[in-house]
Every structure is written in structure tokens, then in C-alpha cells.
Length: 180
Image 1 (cartoon, rainbow, N blue to C red):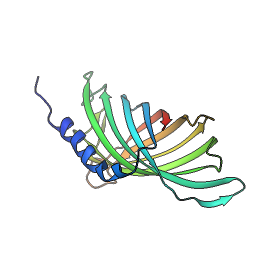
Image 2 (cartoon, rainbow, N blue to C red):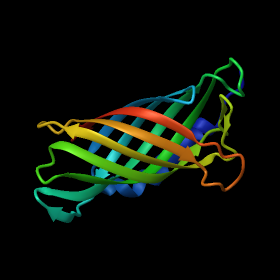
Image 3 (cartoon, rainbow, N blue to C red):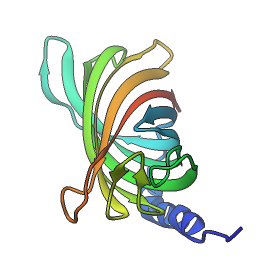
Image 4 (cartoon, helix red, strand yellow):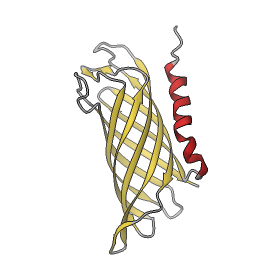
């Protein structure tokens, strides 16, 4: 079995990318599990909240956070055959969130970020022709009184038609976030 140097290189790139954020303490960590297009995903993340609040009205406002993630994808129909393939994903996403001024209860969020895959995705008849992908998501969730957060997200990956083919990959995701 050949060692894939891309995965440790991607992890090192993620550490270097978030180093400037190190001056600000991590606000939360997350674990997410997703499925879609014959692909399973497990993802870990770190979040840094923004200090800004916009459009405060009726006890709600819009704010956001930086989301840095590292994911492991298990492709179950690699090259449209009954073979598995594993790829890694490093992502950086600014996320906007509409929520209560009390920071508890229901919320809605949306984000568009940049992702780097360890290899080109080719699974179940869907192909992404570049390792660079945009990852956009929309989601809803609930923040409990102790600050833990349970969310349901729909995420789409695409290279924005930088290069063809660009079928896109869609995931339904459950995410648990633990605050510090």
C-alpha cells in the first residue's frame, strides 16, 4: 500500500492557516457526520466567534463565526464501481448565523468557504475535476442552555465551474458543537 503524503500535508496546511487565529482562543469544537452521493463523511472543526452583531431586532440578530474543518470522506462507489476510496478535506468557511440575543434556542445559518481535497472526487457517476472546491451550506439548529449546539445542515461542494466536469456533491449533515 502506497503512503499518501497529501493527507499529512493537508493537516499541516490547516495548522499553518489557523495559526494567526491562535491569538484568539478557540470558542468551540465540533464533530459532524454526513452522507450523500454514496459518500460518508466524518468531520472535526474549530470555531471562532465574531464580535459583531447586525440587524438586531425583536430579540434576534445576525452574527457569525470562522469555521476551520478537517474531514475524512469514504467514497463507496469509487469510479462508479463497487470499490471504496478515502479522501481528506481541509476547509475554511465564514458562516453567518441568525439567532436569539440570548444565544440559546433555534438558529439558522449559511456559509460559503474554500476546501482542499486530498484527491479529485470520482464517485457514483459524479466527478469533481479539481481538488479545490467551494463548500456552501445552509442549516438549522438549536443551542441548549449550557451552550451545546445540535445542527442539521445541507452542504454542497462544487468548484464553481472552474473546470469541467463539475457534477457537485451534496451531503446531509448532523453536527454537534461543544463551547469553551
